[in-house]
Length: 261
Image 1 (cartoon, rainbow, N blue to C red):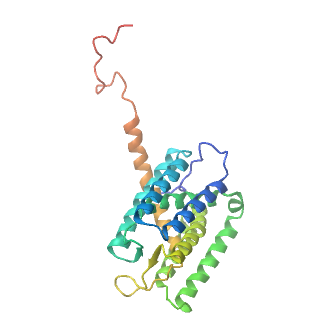
Image 2 (cartoon, rainbow, N blue to C red):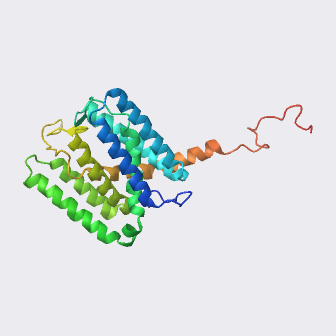
């Protein structure tokens, strides 16, 4: 099976540069994290509504392909969040929950990572950007497993996943963007205390940094989920929306006034 790059379609309107998307997402999520660091649960829920509103506004500018793939990432990431946070306690949020802004936040991060990959500079210097990501991520991962006060085996594993996606994956620009955006947000979120990673995984065998160095590698798997799931979802939507021809056996019979004018 040949995989085509994720998010192949272009936005419906191109009046705003990809850089605008990146700044909107970074400003939105940074603001949400700063406010949530000391907010009540009620305020946290309002932040969730705000984050959903921003995501839906951005998706309104995009093609159905982009919308479906982004929402698949939201669903997949939400399942991961509930598994690894409340259930396994690999990392925890302030209220021991999954904040309402986290699911749409994953969609925003995905859009921002994709937008970084669409920047003219990144597209023109993709190999250089890839090399920089590998070097920077490798240095961070190496520090985590050799010199850091808190060892980070999980980060090194995720870094290897990121390298694998950069080497073989169909969405190299997105993986470059994911490294930039996810690394930034993980550092900010853990520094503010919005969430914290446990020192070890539930087995007690895998050490974890706070944050783990290669967290961006997880977005390669989110991208793969979107890549594989989007075609059948889009096909199903097309079937649902396709009108039934009037002469089709399943079409409703004409009423008694059908021929009147």
